[in-house]
Image (tube, rainbow, N blue to C red):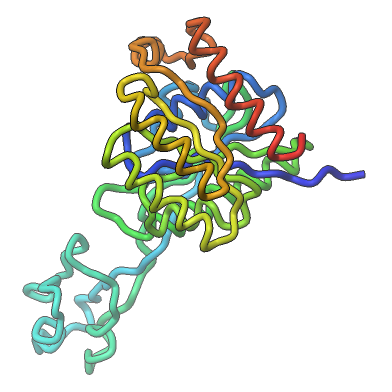
Length: 290
């Protein structure tokens, strides 16, 4: 019988909480899984996993205007109607063009056409810890939520092709569109919090999002010993809210040292840190039901 594909998304209210380092550690601990880096605006899971690209696809989310000089009569109507100042001397500045299509609509000579614009790349790669779906959004481009969806679809396809029953997703920080795209349909969200005033605030906002989309959530605290009082506050808040507490990871430079060597913390071999990560992953698997 075909196994149900389960998905766990690791989230954080801000960048720099150690979310990607934990995902890399989970990848080292779990034998059968596919990974997906959904932080397409600033992806970095590949820095730990050293992937070898197997598939590469253009990501086209928007269109941009293009003027045919053989048809253009230099009437200037497109220039005057473009509210983004993207057309000058009957030439389109692709960096300013928002793809709204007004220029095409008003051109009396049918000289303007809308063409697909490449906004980034989506990849499927092999790593020493299994298959990885990831992407790269071009600087200044939008539609990162759409690209996250592509990354997730690729991860699901690869998981089904390889008969793998688990996808571990490295989600985007914050609460915006990429985060929503990262957790839709997930079986579990692991929220990585920091024991600071802003960390507690950010954690609460992410939990509001998981509640809204009815995704079960767990919380873990990274750098838990830098402010024991706030760590206790997070644990008590989770208890009051009915959110599971997955565990704590103490502050250590070993995470940075491992990253410099392009290793996960499990491969780097800091025993106490590895134990704390193992406890969190065990709790995640218990809540996933396997």
